[in-house]
Figure 1 (spheres, rainbow, N blue to C red):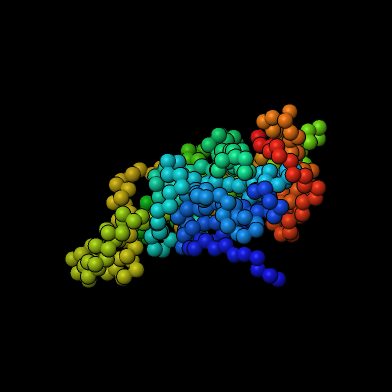
Figure 2: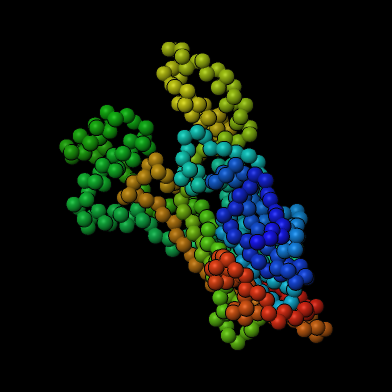
Length: 397
């Protein structure tokens, strides 16, 4: 087929599909796009959201809407009568006090992709907390739009009912003593990693246990204090309103999920000089009297990066709860929880006396109501009977 236009975003990639709808007042659908800027998954410096003109691919929202963490969920669009009235719905994930910041960073060497993807990016980059918002925007609202959902307002709702899986595991052990031996082995390994003691000390604790000794500290089985990290992968979906008496409504269903992050360390631009100075002095690891004697290049580099990052943190205390591969214990897994929402969105006009208010189209005429389109096929449902009303509608949740 013929290529109509191209749009490119250097040093960026996207796991989100565009949403099609009428943002400006011509008869060609436009596209909301969301993409991450950075070297590649899972390291992104910031994310951008904008709308591209369906006629030529030029951006309609400039400057782009920026957020620091970004969401890998795809946008949606509510189809409304006329051209230029559609309402686009998309996610924002940002860091408190550092909204839209895009400074570079990298993980210390040896951090695997799984751990990187589960990092608390706001905490390791800015020592602050993150939040997410679900926003709706049309040509009648100023970017970034109107907030439908804010994770800070829903914190207690999403966390207070979470299940303490560690306590569940303890109850299971009491009910099934035959698996206690396996639990003891896992606990020995976890204790050894947490305390940093050597293998001989671990063997000593095993001997004390077999002899009836009680040398171990208790593992945490109570509620965890930290709030975890929210990740946004669910696109959501539009649905016919449960309020059949109101034709100006459309329901939006979406899910949020939080989990305990992996414990990771990043290097920021201010750490680079420290790292470079120590790497320039790598010869010290060949000195038998030096603390780094016996380290190979990779081990030395790893220690240097951790040391420089620790110097920046300057002894900051960290009592957060983490869930990492390095200390995985099937009897002590810290898990988060998912919350599913169904929100009614109603569209109104400021003045219905002068002109007719554009109405929300029935669900069967919605052009892009879910991931990969209304029917999940990647095809846009074409608009029919799209009268060009001059009065625009604005949405509220």
